[in-house]
Amino acid sequence: MQLTGISDEAGADIDVQIKAHKELGWDTIESRMIQVGDEKGPFHDISEAAFETAAGKLKDAEIGVCAVGSTIANWGHSIKDDFSITEEEIARCIPRMQTVGAKFVRIMSYAILEEGKENDLADQMKDERFRRLREIKARFDDAGITIVHENCMNYGGMSIQHALETLEAVPGMKWVFDTANPAFNADRSKPKPYPRQDAWEFYQAVKPHIAHVHIKDCTWDTAAHAETYTLPGEGQGHVKKILADLKKDNYTGHISIEPHMAVVFHDTGDDTRDPAEIAKQCYDSYTTYGRAMNALI
Image (tube, rainbow, N blue to C red; front, side, top):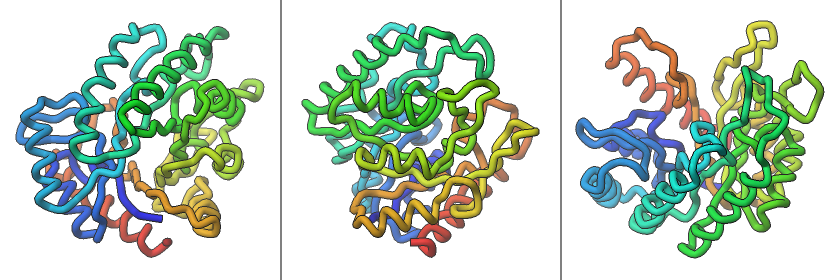
């Protein structure tokens, strides 16, 4: 297994991302958000000039891109949105992945349709989701790129049952397993009030399809209805157990850290901390997390 990380968790600036991975002794990144100068955005959405600058910096630093954490079909996109939005993201993503040599792209299966928090609509439009996923897979297949679906806040992440249904509906699709997501995601295959999922059980269910792994860890507080992120192996993500099992089975893919300990990528709440303080905390927590993973492995 090879260690890497979703590098914007160390900092948005591409120079900071490179510095963190050099410090950790890692020679690849998983690219999600990139900042070049004053321009910041997803890998497939920044301007061509900014992308070329970032790609050049990575090449000069001898840092490869093993995977792209795209926003394609993620929790920020509704299945009710026009499919052209997805098609345009794919069209921008593929040539850039080919430029940096990335072979895996993280995708999802669109946001869960809800009336309110964990109050799901009966019709999740699953047939349309599966149709789109098959089309997404076909387009990346044609480019020699493997899509990996993440168990997150999307249809395939609603439960083990939903994950297996999604895999069956999209033959040949691979999975990126996230160790912490089950701990705070509702198990929507069970009656309300939904219990949380079990990371070990979810891992075992999708294990034959896993081609990439995200490592984060957390504990779930039922009373507060909130999660607290921890160092790897200190939460409810069964991180040590899963890593030991992967190692036993001679897993040769990438293990990509996603600490979430200083800033949560998709948190829309107001952060009153000084930006310089946030930047330092992000970098320090990322490198601390990376060293903890080096030690665990």
